[in-house]
Length: 360
Image (cartoon, rainbow, N blue to C red; front, top):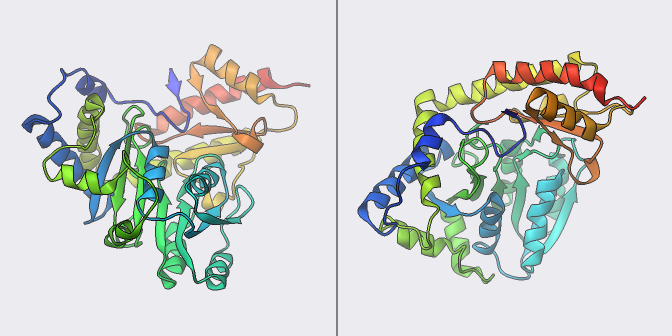
């Protein structure tokens, strides 16, 4: 089966084998060695000298942790939104009582940096800015480095959802002055769902000392204290730690630049393949994602039927659109354990399945 959704992604055999190991004491020396090994390797991939923590949760839990550790109810937040997941980030902040200003752009269109600067200039009390680096809902990557330059001109906290980008697309956390960066194990890390990994800058730590939003499970302070002992505050998903330790070795052996280049090559094949089938990309191609490609469906294509035919007749699984894009686009994930031939085979299957999905 070719699993080509934007996540979960296929796990390499080494990760699956690692998860079959027997349980160990998560308060013992063996787990401490694994946790310390993972933490050191994650810092390399995050490209940070700051703190990195592994939380047993989905990526959304990591997003919630980013919010509650840095803010207080009533704090003003600027949410830069051009897709479903950036809207989720804003929703979480609002749920905890932040005053969120949503700077919204058309889905699939680039963020206007002048508009970001204007919004920050208009309200000096804004404390933090929320950004989704890579929008899997639309198949585009936002210009995080450029956005950071604007945000840091005003000395604001920058909280980043990098769930579907980190480990696949270059994100130099320290160089771009990102204060909290969140990612999830089921994406480019080639591990089953269940772990969120977060980096915390010195500026974010300073904010955490003043933050008044309720936090218990998500407390970075507890995570930091326990990490010093080689532990997590709460019971970790031990098999996923086995897998992550293994896949991080695979990633570092390949080399970050090689990983980024491979994802760029695979994505280019996906985009050219979609266009060769007479279809168009949903997002502006200049900002098209290297981890997921979103394609517009023509009026006479039934996307549900297309997905069904691909799954049942070609052993290929792709994703439909989310929220207001449901029934309008389909998405091909190409992140993590993916090579050029994987996408070529999906495109061949698409070529065969498209005529079967036509409505008229």
